[in-house]
Image 1 (cartoon, rainbow over the protein chains, first blue to last red):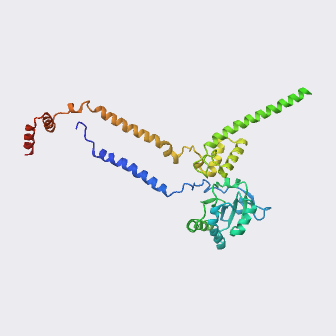
Image 2: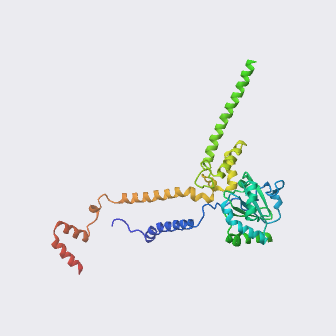
Length: 186
Length: 162
């Protein structure tokens, strides 16, 4: 009784502040439930694709460089014959190549050329051409940390999008292909 | 001839020792550096701990950069350019990480403020609340009840009802 009564706003604050903090925390945790910690946003988006010069899978004496792809929108699909989830996305790539919308370059990541060739023979070859990154150096330059990964690269050679993990029909239809069309028109 | 052979042996030996010493220093430096870099494949392990093939490649890459004379900061920048700040276990202070760096201190400061207010309020209270409180009709009645003079208390209760 000796204590002075608190003012009304103070009394409201007394319960609303902890409740507010709790609700905010709850919000963060809830959003966290639906986020994949394996999807680390790439710092390369909006930056020029790293320079590379790699031997082609089918014609090892010929190389492909980043500059060769200038002037067209293209996809770089990082795959490997030892990669299990590459088998999951592969039919989508085969369909995509039949639709002839955008050239897809395959990067055989840390793969033996013979294994890669055999894999493509068995599963179908959707690639305009494939290049071999035997020691994974180019993969490091592209910030690859899990296969498969797919990059959308624009006419100026700038990386516009990165799909981490296997392509899905949804990702293709809703994100990648609309982006490709938009970039092709610009 | 003997002295020449001894001199050559000495030079070779000291070179080997120097080389080994430099190697040890490099190993120690890389060990420290790799312990603060994240392996992106097994995300809760450092580059030093992880056995993932990518971690192996990155260790090799880090070593070759170090041998080429790059500083620790150069090497960190090299990895951040490719994999983002996520590779650093020791994140940089910048606007997106202010909450991360300052949050704990803000929480601590808030806790101290609340603690001080409680202490001050307690200090303001008299040592013996019962003795200090001015008698009210209710406390007088309670005192009377406790002292066993309940008769008058009942009367006063009935009276106060009117």
